[in-house]
Image 1 (tube, rainbow over the protein chains, first blue to last red):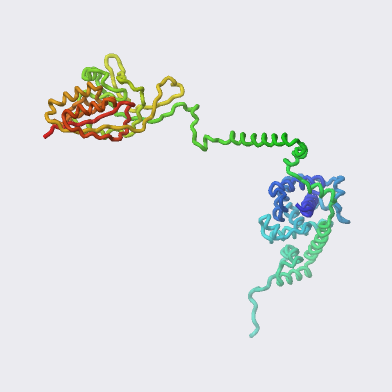
Image 2: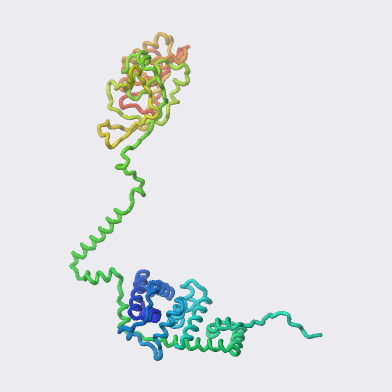
Length: 142
Length: 342
């Protein structure tokens, strides 16, 4: 698995949980899941990454708690002006499907048709989810 | 009068504020057609709420662009480069690669043997191979023999039969008098085809089937179903029984002048050679007024002498046929019909 893919997984879980400890743990689990499927003999495709991340996310779904800063958070260089509390509020208020769609398509820049195919939904549905997530995020006045 | 009246809203695709908001992301991504684009632009220009939604989406897009640039320490990424599966991790922890070669080899063999043996143990072989669990059901029925149910008065039976020693162990009780219906008694082909006979030890004088005595009245009733060749785990003292799938029958025919005189002589000589009647009729039974019927068993060693006996009275046409009833070893069975020569 390439560093870029590892970075994508780490970033996805960090932004999904806003907790470095859980993000690293979830990334380990995703990597093991992919390793079990592909034996790390080749780099998994986007669809496989998405399915593995989704599977891991469902294990951690109920573990999104109030943000507590840890030393490990320093390993993620967040952009200036990023308000973590607002982001956490966004995570709590927005449905998981919309958060995931936003992260995969707008942050990780995965291809929208590929994500839709991996999730088994139409591209229109994915655009709808991203649009709603963006509007929710904008309303949080981040 | 030439002015055209517009009655329908054909091609007038007016967007509500709700749909405008829903389509804002597609509008920004350029995923909508020109008509829709024009309609959304009108909605943005005219509706303050739609305009506000567009601005928030644009802000969010800027934020997500910046989030995409988040940097992660190489040190953290490095942790995931050498990630191994649990087995590899375990092997690393116990430093398996540093073990001596012979120990490593032995450990590998042990693991493989354990896996194979546990797999073999866990596979339900009996289901695949349809093996019966003999320990649970110790009775194995090899074959079932059906015999017709017959009752007989023992007193008259014993009186008419004379000697009990005339019957072999495999012969059933029979009426003393020949049955009047010729076809019923004489037709050997009516015997049940599925016969599996036990193979008792060969004796010069075969044992007699003892009748069951019930007070003054003795019933020699053949059981409707005789289980032959039944092997039980408990019955270890039972003689060894061999299943014989088929036997032979010698069938003969000859013409003799004056059967009334020669018939009893032939019967006597057969008896002298150790022959005993088989079936239900006596030796030399008058099948018809001109035919004598001999159904008997005799030791195989006496075959040549028997042939010479018949030869004294005429030419015997003898054939050996396969027959489902198997005889004990050393015993052969004959059916000979002697007809009055014209």
